[in-house]
Amino acid sequence: MKALEFINHLPQQGRYSFAITEAEAALGNSKIATINALKRLKPNIVSPARGFYLITPPEYQMLGCLPADMFIDQLMHYYQLPYYIGYLSAAQYYGAAHQKPQRFQVVTLKNRRPIRCGRTHIEFIANKQLRQCQTKSFNTATGSLIVASQETLAIDLVTAPQHAAGIDNVATILIELAESIQPSLLIEMAKKSNTTFWIQRLGYLFDILEQELLASALWDTIKDKKLHWLKLIPQIDYQAIDRNAKWKIIVNTDVEPDL
Image (cartoon, rainbow, N blue to C red; front, top):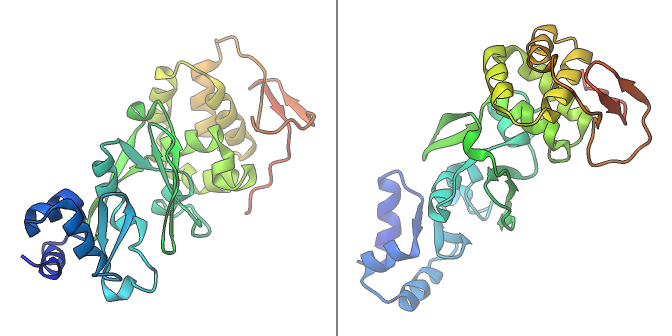
């Protein structure tokens, strides 16, 4: 089989990615010969990661890559790493992102270098507790994607607001998500958690955003616990402008959602 024949055959099966080992077997060549044959097929193929290739139809060649959602599931299987789509990228799937993020955000077990493939940028964010997080599956043109559930997304947003364009944008997303967050699932996750920091931050935000049902659900899980004071935004050291005694939150910035 010729290299061009090989890459023309895969899209007929709904596939737009392959590993170098699969190409070697199909072409019957050595690894070096296979790599050289594939190089001659640019821009019909690109390689966002070593040993992993994408077939780029004409409509995506100006992009210099496929959109991330068309290959990220296959790439993470290639890496043999669990993952879910998180933060601003996940918010898009729930209609809660007011603008398309500049980077496609993928949560996995450990940090990895970001990927730049043409105009497609992928950011990897580590979460060692990933396997305990609730997710949902979304169908795509090339298969499916694992996306943070609304509850997991809310927790991640208050844990690391720097990945979501800041606390104001976090509050905006939480307003959009509130109706679809299930209090029972949030309670379940809170009871299983061995920390309270995210419960305190999320509960405080739900309170000031007047999401009483969700705030009350979280409060019931920690009202009998001894809470420690913590900053609303962990990454900044601004002097406290307020202290919320209920949630033991040191309010170190104003929260102004885009309503």
